[in-house]
View (tube, rainbow, N blue to C red):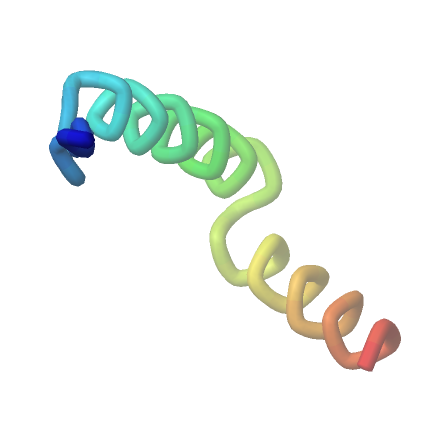
Length: 48
């Protein structure tokens, strides 16, 4: 039996990274980066 391997880096990888970058970039732009990062850290601390 021959196993087929999928390449670790494909077009899907770059598309997903672009979507994440656009989403978080937009959120940071609307909320201003300092406020957004502060809210993110407080939420993470509360979940911890």
